[in-house]
Length: 234
Image (cartoon, rainbow, N blue to C red; front, side):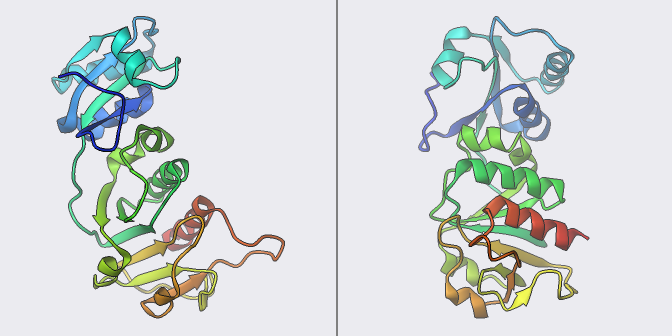
């Protein structure tokens, strides 16, 4: 198989760097096609751990500078993991829901934050950025491979689910930190970076606002998600 520079239509994607590649092999070994190394790679303890893990999982490892240069956008990439894209397993008891996320760096950061607060179910409502894009994978530092990711084709489709929903909105009727969450199963729902959530969400569940000073118009999406995850994880 000849591997090409990444595009959304491909059936596979890549990890750039040793750490996300290690997480890929550790968490999604069954999806790994191969691991590609640079001839300039220094054999550190971390690399030795990666190679041992590949050996234990019977994953092919090869050194191929030409393939690396073809796949990677940056010159300082010495390890690439090639993996087949995979499907999620459906909604969990607690889900982090992102409606139309549009920034790859933000999405990767949110993935890492979600995993840090033990939210392992991520819902992506389309249209949305391609979460298998290597830029998202790299921004997540490999956290994506520990998450169960489920897609919905539209907000309308998602709203039909029976999960208890907390919608984070500037117009939210409940102030975060000023009410008790007595539910054991719930979704935390956020809109995209530019437009937030539509007004239909105000009465589709519990609407929540994160209070901040009047010196800014809104919080950055990853910051908002991090605050909410911390509050609901207490």
